Image (cartoon, rainbow, N blue to C red; front, side, top):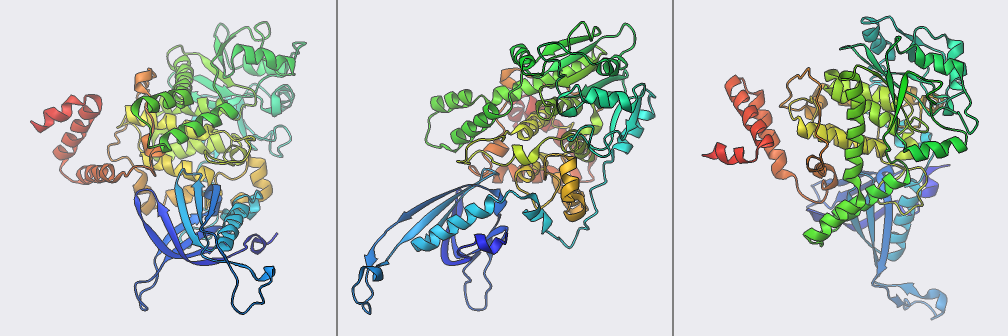
Length: 574
C-alpha cells in the first residue's frame, strides 16, 4: 500500500483553523502520509508563512464533516446540458476530535475539497499496520536509533534483588516466546523452581502467564507476584508444578494473599468456561481476596461519558455533578487506588507476600502491581525509576497498548478491545502527586506526555501489544525510544517537580471519596487556559533554583501549608 493512494487532495488554500481558546488562523492546509499541516498566510511577499498546526494524523480519533452554502450554476461557455452543472459558493467544515482530547475545526472552501480532505484523514488515521506508522519513518537528528532501548534491563533490576536475597533467579525460559507469547524473554522466578516446572505451570495459566516476580520488598523480604487466572475449569483441575511454584514463595507457617481483580461471581463464572481460581485445598497457605476492577467496555464507556460531560460547557452545577457521578470515572480511580493500597498493606504491614491476577493478567493486574510499587518504593517515584517501572510492569509485561489505545474518547467506531487502563493508572499517579506534592520527582507534564504518546506517538515505545510483536516488527532496531528523548538534558528538566524532596517512607494515599479529585490538567487541558497555573509553577521553579536556601524552604513550606490547609493562603497574606 502506498500512502499516496489514500490522499485524495494534498493541498488546499484559504483554510480557517479554529480551536477553543485560541484565535482562528487562515492558511494553507497540507496532508502528508503522517501529518496534517497548516501554514498561515504570510504578511507580505518577503515574510514566510508560520506553521500553525503540525498534527500527527494517528492522533485523530474522529472526523466529522458538514457541507454548507450549496448552489448550482452553469458556466456561460456550456451548452446547457445537465452534465455541465457545477457547484458554486460551496464550503465545508471538518471537526477533528483527537485522541489527546483536543478538538480542532477546519473551514475549507469547496465541497469537493472538504470531502476529499475528510476522506484522506479518515483513511490515513485508520492505517492499522504497525510498520506503516510514523515511528518507523521518524528520524530526529538529535537521537540515535539504539539510544534508550536498553536503559532499564531486567538484569539490572534482578541484580538489585540478588544483592538482598538468593531466593529468586532470572530465567530465559521464554527466550523464544514459546512458553508465554506475552511475556518478555527473561523473567524472575523462585530459585527453587526449574524451567521444566515453569513450562508445566505455564500450561495451567491462561495465555501461559505463570506467576513471576513483580516486586521484592526489601524492608521485610515479602514479594509481589503477578500471573493470569489458573485453568482449573469446572472439574477443578490441579497442577502440582503451579502449586509448588507458589508454595516455594512462602516459608512454613507463612501466609500469602491472592488479590483477584474480578468479583467472586465473575471468577466463579470463569470456572465454567475453563478458567477459575486457586482452590484452598491446593493452595492452603494462600488466602484469596476479591477486589473487582472494571476493564474493557465499561471502563471505555466511563471515559467517553466523562469527556462528553467535560466538553459540555452549557450545563449547570447540578447537571455537571450528576453527569460526573453517572460516568463513574472517579469510582474507578478510587477502586484502583484502594486495591493497590491493599496489596501494599499486605506486604508492608501484614508482612505477607501477594499474588495479583484477574483473567488474562495484562490489564487490571498490571494496574495494581505498578501502583503498589509507586506507593511502596521511593525509587519508583523518581523520574528514571518511574520510567523503569513503566518499562517493566506495562510494556515488557505485555499490556496490549495497540489494542487498548486504538481509539480514545471520541471515536464513532464500534468498540472492540479499547480500554483506558493506562490512563487510569496515570490518573491514580496524579492523585498520589496531588496528595504528596513533594514525594514524586516528576511533574504532571510527564503524565500528560505519557498519555499522549500511548495513543499517538513519533516513538516506538508504546507500539504493539507485547515483546514478541515488537521483536517481529523490529521496533527496537527501526524506531526511536521515547525514553531517549525524555532523558535528554534539555528535555528532562521540563518534567521535573521543582518541589521534590526524597521521601523514603511508604506514601499511603487517602481513598476517601472526598480525597479523589478530577484530573483537570488532563480532562480540561484544551477547554480551559492553564496560563496562570503555568506562570505559578514557573515562579516556583525560579524560587527553588535560586541559591537562597531560606527562600526555597519558605516557598516550599508555604505551598505545603496551602495544599493541606486553604486557610493558610489567607494567613500568608496577613
